[in-house]
Image (cartoon, rainbow, N blue to C red; front, side, top):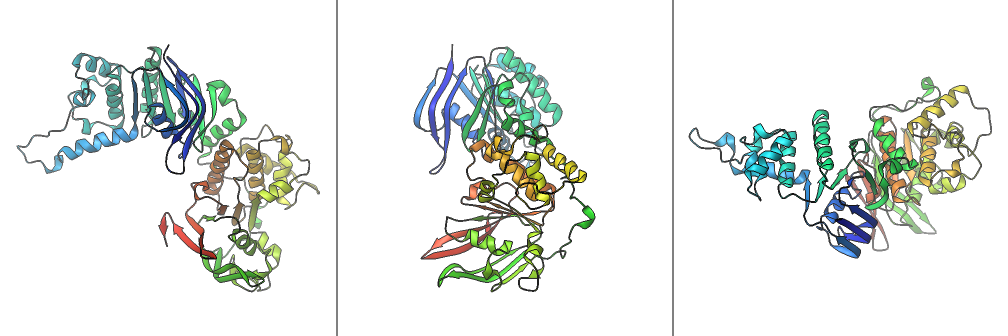
Length: 492
């Protein structure tokens, strides 16, 4: 029986990134789906299985004789190439369109009209064989590419994002056709963005995070895992709104259209040693910033200025939430606009508490609950638990959850009061790859649904959730640091 087996595999993606597959065994006739977020390593996995990536260490044994990989990028290139053959809009009246037909595309490598017709009939595109490929719909071109891939009768077919760009009906049709191929004995491997794209016939599932295969096995077994179930749950949250505040009428309104933070020529030093030196920085409405830099660069010092905890905040030109520091505001005037989560807060949350009470403590800015909780607060805590996919675990002890689930509960604790600014200081520190993916996914959901702006502090740029719009980087230079500010990849 044919099989593909990888043990302790490490595949080169770039000078700094590798794909790690500790153990993977795909047997003839099986159907697999590998799921992961953008950047998780799905397409790299498809290339590794097709022997298109360099194996740095470990073992790879492939007993399949004919492996074919097809991807959305290949399809886009085919369509682009066809349009470049000749621009139909530029043809003269007597000039022939030389674009290839669907039959030409299918038989590009293997000329077998009978098999071409058989496959086209199977996929319902037989009437389209004589049409120019470039004029087909997205779904029709996808089916044409599948026919082409099946011409050499592969014994392992790898499909990279086969459902991308298809409408609901086209996805259902394609899933049905793939199910028929599976029933005919084809070995199928799909890499997918979403759990809800996994077709019903799939037997085995793998989950990728940060280029590591974290989970694999029978579909029911993998999908029953608590973390995987939470990731799958997050896909259904698009368009939902966050729970309200305790009293929506009491929300403190900040001056409209004014920056949340304005820092001009900031200097902080200890014993004449500069920690921050002239830093000018502004956080405008709607901006979400990642702050990146090595240990000791001054990231925590900058945060302490913003949270009001650093005494040199009064000696600098710093405006927070429309008020100049030192203009008579109290520390609580500052903190009521801020939600804050850090690794140190996580470690300090040692009290025995349920996950529900951890979220409730955000109403009181306390670690633990030391006063009566209202019915309204209990209702809102239930809504937050449901949003996080933890509605059945409200009374579960906080410290019995995974580290990533604990971190999510603390983020919810920080957001219950709908602060103008959420500061996440190294929120991915100490998390395994799947928990990191879980936290990033929910940060994106929570930030996009609410009006809160985000400061996301980390050592590495690649840690950023997708909602980030700007980046402030502490770049080592001489004996100190310079400050690089970027917007959407454009250095300012």
